[in-house]
Amino acid sequence: MELHVVNRMGAVVGDEVVVEVPDHFILKSAFHLYGLPMLIFFAAGAAAYLASPVLGFADRDLWAALTGIVAIILYYVAVGSREESGHGRDRVHLDARIVRIQAHHDDSPLVCHHP
Image (cartoon, rainbow, N blue to C red; front, side, top):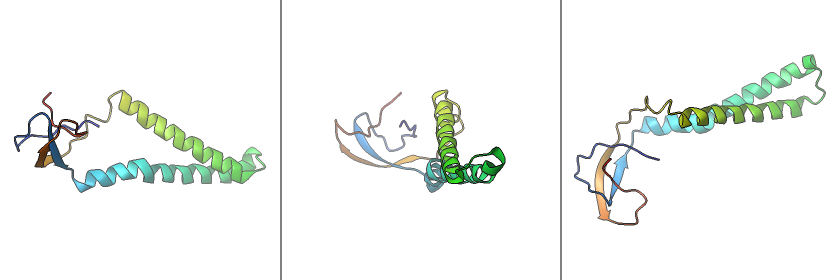
């Protein structure tokens, strides 16, 4: 994950930093990763369960489960293709900031670098 943050702390390349991200971003991300797919699963499953007698499907539970799973897969494919094309990233404006510079570590997974 790449995060662009204003460097007011004077961090240099190789510094390990602590970044503060607003709570609403964490909650929104959790909803899009877990909450919305669960709602889609239940809504698609319920619709398939109710429509299965009309469509002539004998096993309503199986039809509902498969429809819910397919709906989740389609959701994640749509979100993934949207991210790959770059749509959606332009609208994310975080108020993230560096709050502390940790010790200098060359092999740190989180480093500050200049573009």
